[in-house]
Length: 101
Ligand SMILES: Cc1cc2nc3c(=O)[nH]c(=O)nc-3n(C[C@H](O)[C@H](O)[C@H](O)COP(=O)(O)OP(=O)(O)OC[C@H]3O[C@@H](n4cnc5c(N)ncnc54)[C@H](O)[C@@H]3O)c2cc1C
Image (tube, rainbow, N blue to C red; front, side, top):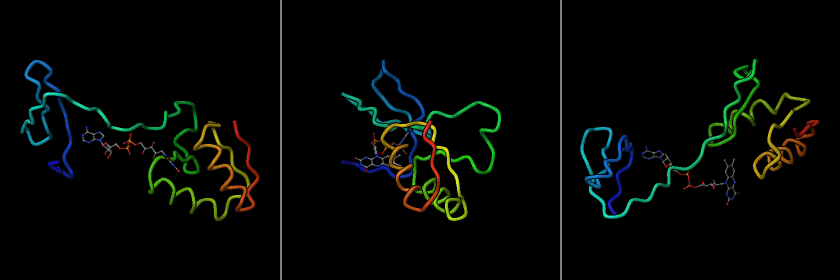
């Protein structure tokens, strides 16, 4: 395994079987695995960018949410999947009223 930290893949050349990196260099492949993860779906409704609206994906998101939760009394969680319900349970443990949509 050749580890290339802080390196972004910016283009896939399927004909030449090469991945182009952000610095312009290229890496050849025989088989390519795309394992770039997932992002939360962003809301485009009015108010979605307000200060007390949080998305939950990484450690920074979790820390911002936890900081806000220290003074919050009520929370609405949009998305009742695994992450949404786990967040709802954590907020309940802090004594916050939670509504899951
Ligand atoms: C809040 C939260 C809690 C979770 N809790 C659990 C849990 O308790 N147990 C559990 O099993 N799972 C949990 N999960 C799910 C788990 O984190 C994910 O399923 C797992 O991280 C997915 O792994 P992945 O490799 O597909 O993606 P990721 O871990 O997201 O990794 C993708 C990587 O690809 C990199 N990347 C993206 N685009 C490029 C590019 N163009 N060039 C180079 N690199 C790129 C990203 O920087 C990232 O490092 C949780 C997820 C969240 C959000």
